[in-house]
Amino acid sequence: GAGADPLLRVESALMQFGGLKALAGVDLAVRPGTIHGLIGPNGSGKSTMMNVLTGIYKPTDGAVILATAGGTQRLDGRTPSEIALSGVARTFQNVQLFREMTALENVLVGLHHAFRGTIVDAILSTPRRRREEREARERAMAILEFVGLGGLAQVEARNLPYGKQRLLEIGRALALDPVLLLLDEPAAGLTAPDIADLTAIIRKIRDAGITVILIEHHMDVVMGLCDRVSVLDFGHKIAEGGAREIQENPKVIEAYLGS
Ligand code: ADP
Ligand code: MG
Image 1: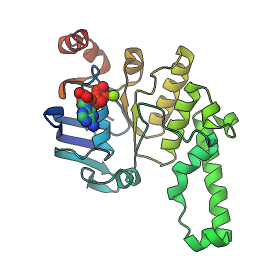
Image 2: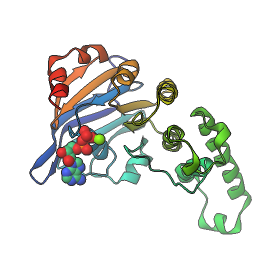
Image 3: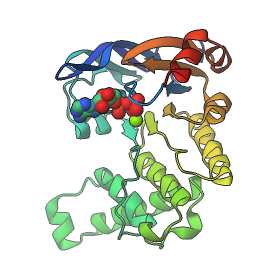
Image 4: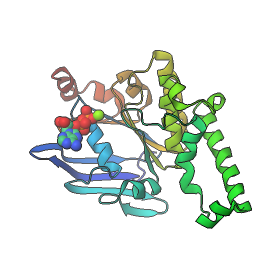
């Protein structure tokens, strides 16, 4: 809640691509249990920030710090899989699913880290292995139900309507059991009813205690969901505050009108 120490802190993040500073020294503090919006015109550095937070890009300079009950740790400089195991999960701006796999199998892929069995367990199909597989299946089904896909578990991802594919991606990210979930334009290309479903699920995720960073262009989605919003423009943070005050901020209006 208010006043709580941030779950995630970004300090002076610099991400340089040749002569271009996609992030020109950005500070960010995300409080636990909130939905934190990250907005800004096209090319302002939002996806770059996601990629820095998840280890896809190694920042040129600056620090990314995650502080959970388990302790405080630096994320910058670590690999994407290390960061995922620390509890930071994401979806991508473009859908990235295993298209030939069913919805259930896509979530099971996200769960594979939960298997603690050895290679011998796998080869011999030991009782331990069979029990773990059954538990993983049950968890995957529970996650599918949570994102409203319980009835579509056996449908191949490529045969799901686009809106459901986006929800499946979120389900797969939830399989990591994250403390922080990053969503990069989840409402892009969705119909109004799909956006309503998505909005309800993002709120449910926050209410389950998972902190969310939401990149989104649909301002009504941002306004309806975000506890706090940071605004990027040309790699700089130009404003930050509650959703309503951000919408009325002259710098923000100018950045959007100029784009
Ligand atoms: P946004 O998500 O806000 O639309 P991005 O973070 O994707 O913006 O991009 C910010 C800027 O960084 C853009 O000018 C983009 O062209 C540039 N950029 C992003 N990734 C790379 C990369 N891998 N190599 C070179 N330039 C990049
Ligand atoms: Mg982007």
